[in-house]
Length: 368
Image 1 (cartoon, rainbow, N blue to C red):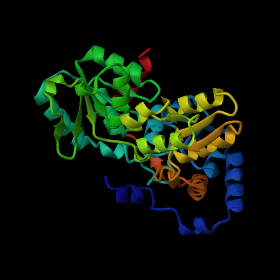
Image 2 (spheres, one colour):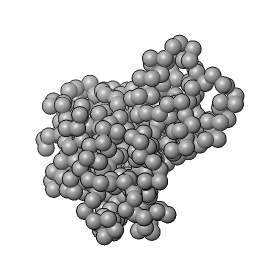
Image 3 (spheres, rainbow, N blue to C red):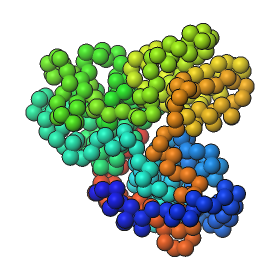
Image 4 (cartoon, rainbow, N blue to C red):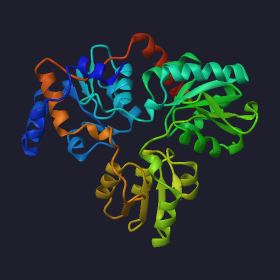
């Protein structure tokens, strides 16, 4: 389905008139609607959202955490998910049928999730089965579409988060000889390396050429990495780390594992968004940090922990462009459409896809 079909199916784009409203007027109207709907409305806000949106969030966190928290809320009739499409899909899959999940701007996608579609994945699976037989178990980062999660669930695999990737990879390697890791090659590589798997036992599947990129016998590859990446975290480089350390030898570099292997190895520490926040919160006052993750979050951490000296690892970094499609005008528009009984941006995952995707999610949650 094209983005045009999606938009037309949800009555098009936000009217231009919303862009002419003053911030004060929009904030007042959003606050009034939140008060009017009370517990029947839930607004989850992802860590990467703008402050203008986060100020109205009832809960904040990472994507799966928000979907789980939404599922625990039995009162909300509408869940206005301020994040991106795959996150809203997960929320729809985990919440009750009587609850409606809304994405304020249907153009808010994820470039990483879009790097693996079903046609490519089915084709890759067929090729890999021909190469190495029935020796592969698929895993997918939660930053993937519901269809990819369903594919993984159907083939006995599980989802992973950046927090639990090690545990899930350890589990998967007890199930089969090798892993197909979708769609982020960097999280897969960094996690596998941390588990002691050498780089020469990893290969990259290129979905654009339908080829396994390796100079070795495919049978030697324990980890097959999908050639995908985060468009934000790929913009942090070794040169950024080197430059900032030349300027300040006492600064600590902390990065997300969606960064490249080289950057993660050069950093002082790497971990999930929660790990980054918790590490800085627990640090001694006056500690200096260069943070390699999304700019909205870096700026928010900087405001929340003024006792630390915090800056972005990449001074020219921009916020996540797709995440930033959710802004105050779109939030207001989504809420007013709900109030008028004509919700837009409704996210609905088909039942078969939902069942298989939830299988993958539940396998992950069962791993201890």
